[in-house]
Amino acid sequence: MRLSIVCFFVLAGFLSNAQDSNSVVVHKDPRIDILVRKQIEVNELTTREARRYVHGFRLLVISTNNRAKADEAKMTVNKNFPEITAYLMYQSPYFKLKVGNFRDQKEAESYLKKLQAFFPTGVYMIRDMIEVNPDKSAER
Image 1 (cartoon, rainbow, N blue to C red):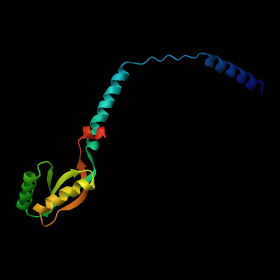
Image 2: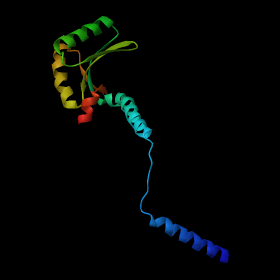
Image 3: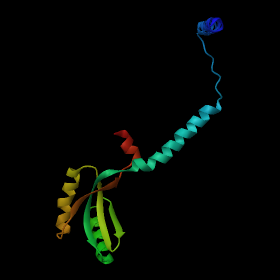
Image 4: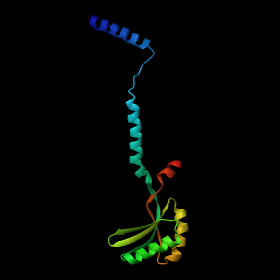
């Protein structure tokens, strides 16, 4: 019992002496800053692709198994609406032409009405992953 009390007081005295010094000196290797900068660059590159795609809307202009009709529809869209991007995809057995990268439904609806004049068989609004400019998305 005496030994434990003596150890307690010795330890308490040692800890009280350690608390008296208020300064801590850290010696940092300058290579750490280089590693931190490299890691920031790697993080930027690896997350850029993930920030490039977000949930939004596209307009499905045509879904056909005839490649010529799909190409013709894409040319019509490119000629009459050069400001929106047309994506021709093949999902067996159909060629699907989707247009636009619309973040909100209102913007898609305005183009929906314009496209229906050229494609009376039907243009449909669909939810899709859309492309955005990574630099512009960081500004918002």
